[in-house]
Length: 549
Image 1 (tube, helix red, strand yellow):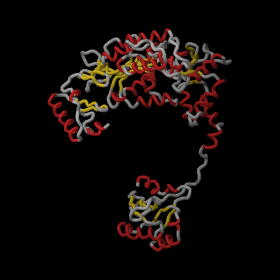
Image 2 (cartoon, one colour):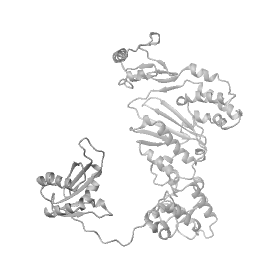
Image 3 (cartoon, rainbow, N blue to C red):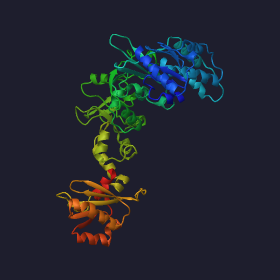
Image 4 (spheres, rainbow, N blue to C red):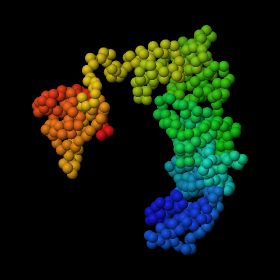
């Protein structure tokens, strides 16, 4: 901590400090000599010395915090890797935790590490002892195989664009950040991987793909923030998420996060995605046949759309898994389903019925009569919906669902909504209160007294704010007390000599502005007193302007 304080101003410019280890780095030998001189002078000025047997000067490669650092990048120390490879299978949870901690120290160097370690981390959930299983042994050996290779990472090139590639499996997610200069191979900057939590394992595969992208961007934020990069994934979910307009909190948070970054999306088909070699593949595949039954969140892939002459079915973005299952069951049990042979505007794909109001519009999920009230409650009455108006509710519904007479059903539901009936605006409006519009400067003036505040050295506790209602010019004056006499004195000394007498003064209903002395004085000056309504003091423009005073 002392070395960090002493070298303040040099840190992260040409110097790094970890406890009592100091690293000085430079681009050229001349710069290096200059930087060394600055660091040594600063240490000498604070009476700090360096151990001569630990000093290394002019090194192109150093060992630092368990890694070998050189101009090309970083790599793990072979001795450190050897200690992991020589570790026998753990017999206790304490030994297992030590092994996992050692492996996680190398996570940036090893692809799919978290997913590979998943069978081992699952053993920690057991309450009694450690029961070594076959999957755990295979994971243990697979980790050692992954570590038995040179573990190197390249140093980022300043003017080269980053490429972030992500993927997800049923157990976890992984990402790799790299650069690929023209005519050269990939320069791996870092790997990252994480095992899904118990909750995340229950996500639909498309949600897991979205989560992998969001997690990877957050993980590599220091590299990606405020600069364009390429996002490469084998899932089309990100295109949809980046345009998400729904109300689900989780997806909304993800969509907002993506909007903070500047990226170009590249779709990499699964067979061309190199990450499956680093992360077990996602078992969910997008095919036209299972579009209606298994797709939980997204519109159909572009491949499906291209096969149709017109735009294909569009799953509602805000439709939850439970809601879709409910619609599916309702369609199966619908006593009066649409006649697909004779009624226009309906079609069946997979096990689901789709509808649309007219030719050329997107196909939307058909909602049977039995569950329309529940759908209306979710899109209007729920906390997420927030009781929107009929037009907004109708737009949200028709974006994803279809049934004939939807608009009338929406209006009827909102008309019968108790909460909307209690808080909606009255249909009749009271007679408007006449306003006074100024036509020239300093003819209509507004006053407001702010305070009391903590007493200043000059015993001031209030601020008198005076506003010209024509030009919105504001002047303020410190006041010691809220007495009418003091306020009148400020007007007489500061305002009238410079701006003249106004025709009217607007104030609130404070006692200092409703006193007999105030009224008589304004009458003597031939100024009309105006006051704001008691129930609406913000009619005084000074009440609004005072927020910036």
